[in-house]
Image (tube, rainbow, N blue to C red; front, side, top):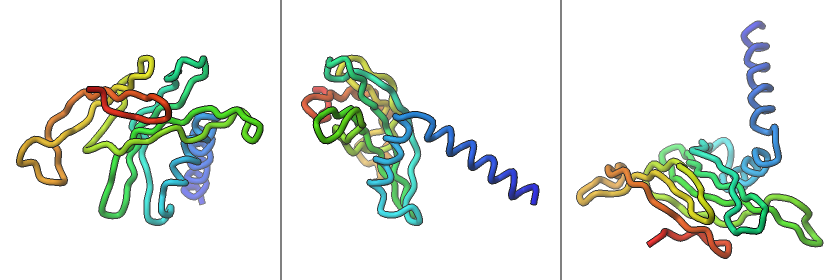
Length: 149
């Protein structure tokens, strides 16, 4: 009984921490919409930052997350933006996403530049295991994310 109650309290505390603000709720709703089913897939966040990517004085949510499947995983860079129009008022909606190769962690955001530490493939690396860690800069522009040249 004590163990069950303790686990329940831990779950309630965790749920409240995750859903404690508008950005957390938006991130969780977006990621859940991307999963094939909670019994098959899960996710881990690898970094979150709020930043004004398009110089409109409204901060977007920038995050790197890992989709975890039973025998696979993939990393993603995603931007959620505030939408204000006659249908949706002050809610986060999907702005852009990009699949990332290898492990990835969000480092920082400056203007419309998003910097990520990412593992990339060296010649001869097996498909599972890119071996070179690089700092890669991505640009958010017009609802698209592209790699800086």
